[in-house]
Structure formats: structure tokens, C-alpha cells
Amino acid sequence: MSALIVGLIPFAFSAEAASNSLNIFPPGSKPYGLSYSENIKNFWKWILPIPAKDNPFNDNTGEKCALDQSNLNSSVFYLAPNGGGHSDRTCSVPAGKGLMIPVMHVECSEFESPGATPTELTDCAKSDQDKTNSLYLKLDDKEYTMNDLIKYRTRTEPFETTWPDKALFGIEKGGDSTIVADGWYIITEPVAKGNHTIYFKSSLLPDPTSGAEGYATDIKYNIIAK
Image 1: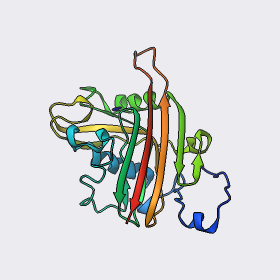
Image 2: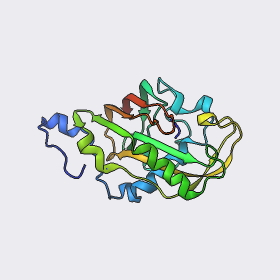
Image 3: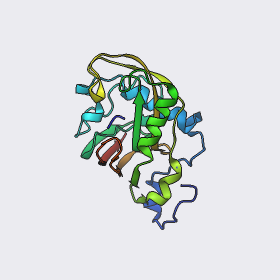
Image 4: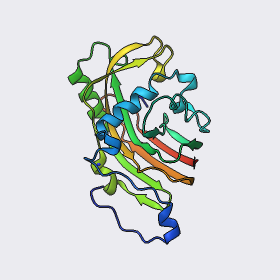
């Protein structure tokens, strides 16, 4: 696809399980000194410049999950979404970094809508994500339903990105573009050493007005933090 939990449900854990649990930053906070919106902009500035053939977006195994992240000087490790359907990925990440999880996502750009104004790009992203009808996230032993996640929706202001040739979403000729991102993105506290399981899924209703088909994604990450 091209394209907020104020109060968490209480859970009972053993001391061992709690020490290995992943916690998430609340909406409106500034994870690692940046707002959610700023973190989301950095996520798209990471993933869009990678050519489609090498992009973690298109990698079902997780082999390319860390591509181009080592030089970002970021406190956050970005987990890639996919274009729909199921992906089961195994990914090694640096312990002590937070994880960004794009439970549901979209970007609208000038490349996909030539001549669109920033306002039109904003409307494009909003219209797409307004059709979201399911959200689910499981971090190790913690589960979050749509009722928990709904307040995490974040839409960015228009910002600039650079695309390569043969980029994601069928963009053949790259260059600079204004984009707007929208969706539900979660950022965790620093991940502890060890193995973690991240599972998220979401879906969009079809749009009979534009003819856009429905969309559903289902991704499992087997995280090895070291």
C-alpha cells in the first residue's frame, strides 16, 4: 500500500514476563525527544529512498529489515509494513533502541498525484485512513485492540522526501517530492536483549466512490535484540 491508548488494559504478569515486556509511549508524548509526527516523518524518509527491489517493505523474511538503518543516528529502529497480506519476518535489532511499528499507514505524494497541492495530499491521506476498520497489536504478552489503539492516529504536516528510480508503489523516475503521511504508528520503549514477538494487523474498507479495493495486512516480527 502506498500510500492514538490513553489508558492501557491492565494485565497480570509474572516478574520474569514483566521484565521482558515491551511498553509503548502514549500519544502526545515525545519518544526519544521527538513528537510522534516527527518520528513518522523520519520513518518515511528512511523507507522511501530505498529502491523497491531491495526495500524491506517487499521483504517477507526480514532479511533486509535493517537496510540503511545503521547510519541514521536514530534512537528508533523502524519495522517495515508490507503491501498487504501476511509476512513472517525475523529481524535482528540493536538492544536499547525503540521500535516503530506501522500498524496502519499511508503516504500521499506528488509522484502518485502529480500537481497535487499540500492540502490535496492531506485530504488524500485522511480519506484513505478514514476507511480503517480494524487495528490489532501484540507485543510479547501484551495485546492491544482497536479500542486501545484508536487514539494513536497521527497525520503529519506536508514534508519533503527523496525517492530513487524504480521506487516503491511503481514510481519509475525518482526525485524530490512533498508527501503527507497518516495512520496508526506505535513507538516502544527501548527493547531489552533477548527474543521478542511483534504481531500486528489492520484493514481498510473498500471505497466505492474511487473504486479503491479494500486492504488488509498481517505481519509477525520475530525480534532478536542483541
